[in-house]
Length: 450
Image (tube, rainbow, N blue to C red):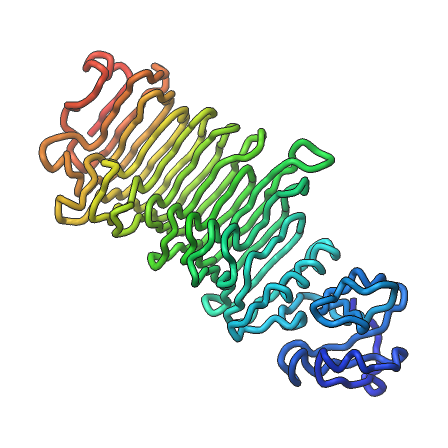
């Protein structure tokens, strides 16, 4: 909190390194810049002799008895406290965009946010190079950038998660998080996930859920395995999320659980999920996943021989329920499609709706096209699956007089009152030739209104 200060009597120092020589702690201290004058780190400080030096972070709370790297390791009491109101600037912690490793400085910032119980962080229009950033147990956080020029590059990370709002070591999840207007990248391609939210057990509770997350206008690129991972979280609003083509990400958006608690209530609007293998994968392995809306989104896989299905919904052990794709574009751009389908449906799937969809299964060259647009896998439990007002283009089998959708159906169960329905398909659908169920059985559970 900004206190009343007398600027005229303030002691001026040129940079952070000069603070250690200040002996008069009665006056207000004015830091003219962190490294140099007016570099963004400037500000007023007041001495507080009662605060424990273990709270020092080198940005808001400064211990003048130890170096920057040892902030928080001093003994006793007494620190300089930055006087401010409102948002937190990264420059206050000596975070700069010159390509050097800013991990220590950024972790000092995270330490302060965790100590304070939240806050709003402003990112500059620069590229900040770091290793992994761990926001575990940080709640009530807003991080705002200035668009594409505000970049966090995990170039010094060797593996793991880049921006981690997760659960580990008995510490629960994070809640009330807003991330807006910046780019996450990994210029050295050595990570597992760019951005992850995860729930998990704590020492006090069997499960603590991460949730109430807002993501707006984020650019994710150059991750190793996953772009955005949501594991066991709830209440997510995402708008304008873009995963770019210049990326080796295996999965663009990955939704799953790691705890025995229902996961869901997600809304994705105007997002573009692009990946080398699979743009979207949802799998329910440990508990129910429900209530997901994709509106005005695009799903693409890469021009890559390793590409798989564009979308996979896998109700592995538990059900995936109430998922709607509305006015979306789904496209396979693979030159060596090896999984034979663009959309793969597996396991327990209930109330899945594809409405007003453009689905392209490949390029004009038939060798690039998927065999099937939609595939229902064996051992499924399918209820109320609807494909409505859907255009399907460049499907290999259909172009040869085959089928657009392929239903294995072996060991699957159905609900007669809630059949699988195809309505308003622009691409003509011929009689299935490779169904493992006989035609009479098939007609009981499907309604085609082409």
